Length: 184
Image (cartoon, rainbow, N blue to C red; front, top):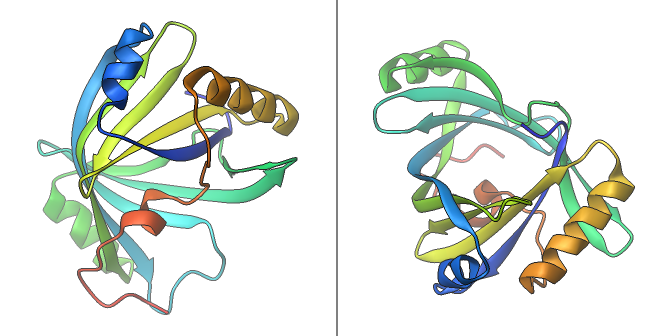
């Protein structure tokens, strides 16, 4: 766990996993899951909050995040307000998670399916490579307690991997398919 994580995403091509492997990265953890996002009726009072049910197939968990987007020099990225990053509020069956959020008067406002994902490491740092809606996205997370150090680390990784054009948008902002009415 990285305290107060700072992250950025990069769109990459379908051959990026091979590139990483040639650079010495190994798959630490393969995964796939679907996130169902929930919002209060009328929407959140401020940006950067996300509440979701993450469905791993055999278990589900309710996760809350609150991030600030900030620009440091020429790089914009997200920084978690909580040292845990995603705060786990509950774990149980899909039905239990849905019932709990309905009881709390939240409503589903979108879904994102991560069809294929890999946590990969070269021993120095880890990245997450994910296929979402047929597109490949690389997520780079660094420790975000010190913005100057987070900036330096992010720039170092970007140069090392040949990455350009980071986005601070979340997967929800980039890919959410709305299955129910989206609160305004």
